[in-house]
Length: 238
Image (cartoon, rainbow, N blue to C red):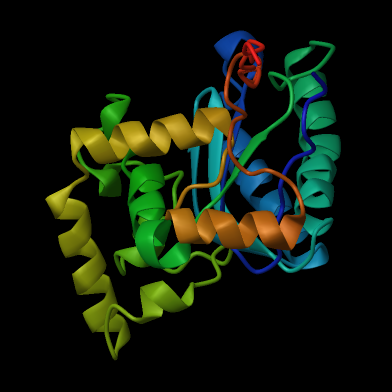
């Protein structure tokens, strides 16, 4: 069965995962991280994609973004690759692709999952044992949301602004959410969604997406459809 094209919905948040090939490192020093951040910022501006959260892990990139149209997200990711991969290959005297296939994109229902996705992304360095506290990892958007330092890559989402009436209130509320953490079940739900690429949200949200996109937005049921049962009608004696 042919693979469905990636589902991109304008003005909806999307959880993006891109892995290094064979889980190899795609960031080796500070200059690699800052170069990627610079190109991410430029590509987001150029292709009108709002970046709400991100983390640059040694062998993986995670983003939470809202594209303004159906083509900007793909063009942004392609443009970043065309800048970063030649830079990385020339610097480390290597050749070939840097990424493990296509990036994965999951449309997210904002009210239910936006803040969870943001926290999921920014707490990944802790789960990966790269640091003890999110604030200790310099290559994520946590410092921006927690009020440590502004990040020019980030465009704040309305749901983040809804955490408080002032920057201080929003930052304090977000720090409190991060301290609460995510449950094991929440992390599993977000992990599964990121890996499989199907929309993350309520049944009503998925129904509306399916209607809007004119395509299925959930996995097809396995196996062949059941054949209708036939009933043999035996002739009766007249």
